[in-house]
Length: 448
Image 1 (cartoon, one colour):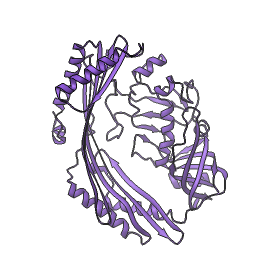
Image 2: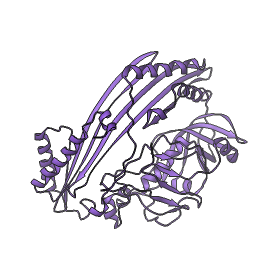
Image 3: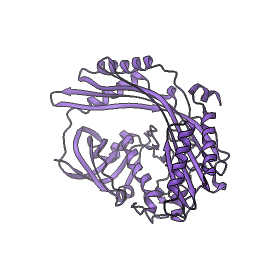
Image 4: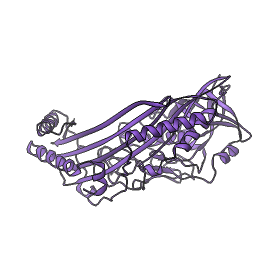
């Protein structure tokens, strides 16, 4: 156990031995193959309101997922109790289930040659020496500074601080055993502002694996206040068609729909609008999109995937063309392909950016809608239909004119991707998708 893991307080040796014991038990009960995923985490969150602590929540969880394979039949069980009798019961349940499921030729572990026996050691664990009392003081300070920054800020809805330490262990009966720790820390501030036209709400947040890379409390408070105040006086628009800019934090969701559409599970179930699009253009030719799974401080970084396969820097879009899907072992077999190391998802997906910041993108757009807030889940990955509530700012002559609320933007994801005009250099890395603001040539905007 290294120094970081000792500081985090996890007995990783015990967790790895637990995984080994489960595999031994599965073999004893007749499983031809077996795998174990162990996820353990602990931490706390606090929230402040009206200058005092509102909630303090502690969490300490351990989830063990067991999968066994018997004669191409699969059985699974999950538990959080690590007592020997509970573990034996879970393995027995998984083996019992496997005897009654249908045979599936795609079922089974990754090939031994695909496993990440020499996986890299990534710096993803940075424990925060923060007491609950310290966290409460930070939250109260953030709220206090935000409220003092502008007389139109009438109250805070919530100011919160959270810290989580975790470890992931994966083992299988091919002899692979992998383990890596990681952390996540965040602060957020949600405010309400009021003027003669009414009230508006907005927020700001900061998140990182390393507390030293978090935004300062004062900057967070100021950003939250500025974002909230500029929403005052928001109004609807008449229904129209116009160019649209998705601000970087919302552009992340736009690319997230693409990531969902190229995942193997959606493809072999024939529930993706990008089925059959390999080696076909999806974006304009200047767009490249790839993942960086070993990125230092990356919130999506991981040395191996949920199948124990080495993660890699896959290029999904090259010069606008879809070059590969994102697959784990099972979906790859269903599609007659090879795993891309994406069981469990993609890792730090990034789109190449241009040289224009957001003000320059506004100038390029000239007239249209800048979206800073999205509402609802109106993206259909099967058809590509897209319709979501939105808020933001109306732009004329490259300058923001007034805040907008209560509109819906609609289109087809296929068309939106194909008519992407520019990606800004204002990259937001507070998530698993890294992108700047995105300008789309034309969308339907439904308003009053």
